Image (tube, rainbow, N blue to C red; front, side, top):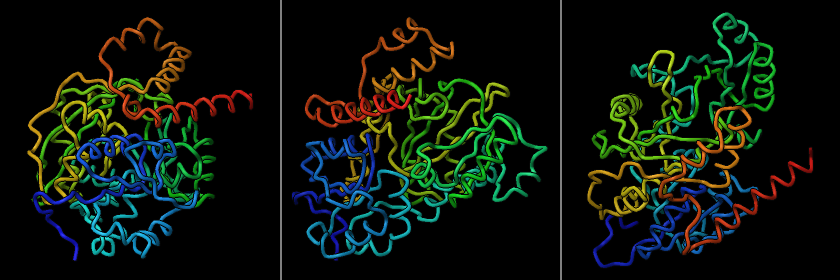
Length: 397
């Protein structure tokens, strides 16, 4: 029987991170300082070079079946009783679908598996938001050419051909979604997704720069109540208007609380909860972009601002909860230098940002998702891999 409440004075149980990138690095570094042995399955190759992580060897193309074979088989017996946390969408899906079997061997966070799977599915997310009265962009479910023809008169351009499961789409196409500027493009790109057996929907693209994006974080307890409130803004993303954030800042945005929590209540979410919104300047409304029931790429921003989410969740799981966070520092920045340079260059080509304005935006004390003087190798490896990709792209041209 797995010990569910860790005795005071006993050695802390190990942690297994399933997947993840900068978020996993942030969690591992924090918990290693607590004396926790952190193991990792999968995840970004550069993260596995961290001195805070013990990489568990798996086949290069390992997927859910390989994870299950290891975690539920004798090979992981020495880690029995470890805390098991998800670092990306694929691992959220894996934990939700295998929760009952895994619960007999590992310590898992509180969750509602059905709600987590709903938040992974973009159509389920938007339908839940609509039922909760939370504004969303216009969206249209499509599964055939006939569906497209039926909604043709309602479509607005440009729009997004968005996968219902982002991680499945990214594994196939290497991007988060397709853009479409016409009905013909929408038909072509929907068909490409359907040919790959990936379910999609069409979604209105909210106009405006990336600095209109903002996010809310909390942890939903067993009574369905938010435990704390944390909000931030995006300053830039790369690629512009569709990639991950390259520059973030903590902010006080109280108007996000009722919107996000209305969605979380509607679907019955428990545990970690994050919702991203974009301000639509056409009507002044905050509209839901997506929801994540996991640690996000900007996790280090929360840690630096005073809300060490990975440490807080881990100690809650082992039955030794830390005090509930009572606030965080406003105006804390998180910067990804190499990718933000790429964002700047793209924005400059578009005539949306000049060099002086970009440099001025950086005149703050910076924190970093990847770099740490005490653990420099993951940052060095990730930048080397980025340089290799740039050289390959230039060679193709």
